[in-house]
Length: 206
Image (cartoon, rainbow, N blue to C red; front, side):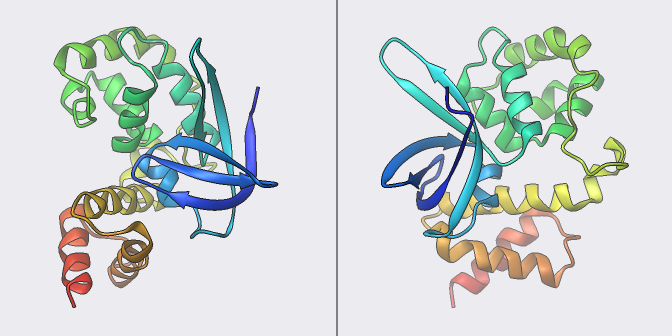
């Protein structure tokens, strides 16, 4: 089983990337957060991997952080949550947000993810409420879940969401990422998603 890949990042698409390891290109599916955390091709990249073996395929799912991989494993234990939906949830919510949403029974927050309706959100809350204790938050040591909304993890989440939105509008990730980073730097990371997208569009249109 493949647990980690380190090699040259050959290609990045909306929901996957290709990592060249000694001349072999591995197709790795990933959340928008993990893809946003990767360097620019063709720089060296390293991702943690969850290997899923099916009768007709061997699929690789990549993660920038161990916390995201742990949540992927937990989410896919819920009936109706396959790998694609799990990645959609991890694209919409960082681990600390997931803990908050499940603990509070916030189904609306979970339905922000593509493919998650009210019924599936309720099932996630019901089945995982007692399993969240001890799950990683993805926050730095000493940080609390309550502080996540204003910390670096939240900034990374906004960047990932902005890149996903700009990709949907036809902009290539390679041209959009530096613009998003500049917008976040100007606001010192304290800015809403809609403002980041608006300012980035203004700059990209020049």
